[in-house]
Length: 367
Ligand SMILES: C[S@@+](CC[C@H](N)C(=O)[O-])C[C@H]1O[C@@H](n2cnc3c(N)ncnc32)[C@H](O)[C@@H]1O
Image 1 (tube, rainbow, N blue to C red):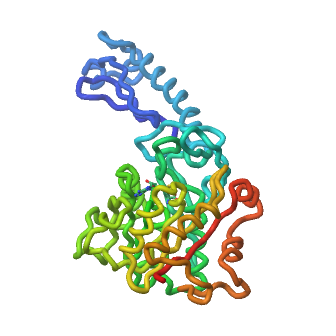
Image 2: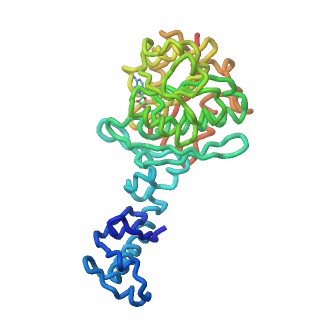
């Protein structure tokens, strides 16, 4: 990195190709200077009649290489992450290394939304602990703030991911033969984890077309095949598509077919509780269940939020599953879902949760 590749275009202009892009000097080298049979020393001193002397050209190239070298080092510094080769814009400096380890981060309220430093990275790496190895999931983000809900990974999705890892660690067949749907998937981190953890098929959905486009990109980025339209034929395949909550929005082919519904941070708006519950009810198969996790936001009471949703969900025929009816076994010595959840919260993250009212994990099924 940092060196410059020098070539000439068809008009014999000098092209310097470096990691900061292509630069054309505009200088035209006469063909007899490039094909001259004179000695190297003569060639070096020969002037380009229409442009600059070759020696000057070489100096320019050398200087550009010297400029490119530190610049390239700056661009790839560990403090800066790049979304992909098309996005060389440094987004912010001093990114904490925790952003690439899946740690929960403190949020701050901004007008109309919440923000936190990791959400502004164009690309995040989230570890996924499979029973025999740890993989890395790459998640592209498009920032946080007003109008961007779902275009970055929320703490709730990170925590739900840890819950799924732990369930599979104790129940290796948890996702086996299961058709999974995620509601309000945002970046699709949780859907991608469910696929990696063994789900037969995953339908990643969101009401925001920008989140669906981002989710598609993240499926591709993590080499997970999918189709973009729902049909009866592809019920066993992964699908990424738009789904607005509301009973009448669910495609006929998927009604009553979903074994596991996943959701994180979807209950912050009480006006959506009824349509969210209706969607769950319409999608769930007879023995299907919902795994839902919400981590509070500053100023909100997560218990009030989740309890309010559960009350509304009862009217759609859904209820919270009792411990003895859970569709998975809890690890030995763990006797409540709260205690189960606490196991995944690092000591350094406790203060973030106490500041935001904690987190709540629900398993919901039919009454
Ligand atoms: C706070 S974000 C959470 C995203 C993701 N689950 C996570 O935890 O990172 C809420 C998501 O729900 C989606 N959403 C909100 N209301 C919706 C609705 N009525 N229908 C479908 N999706 C909705 C938003 O577009 C957004 O992606």
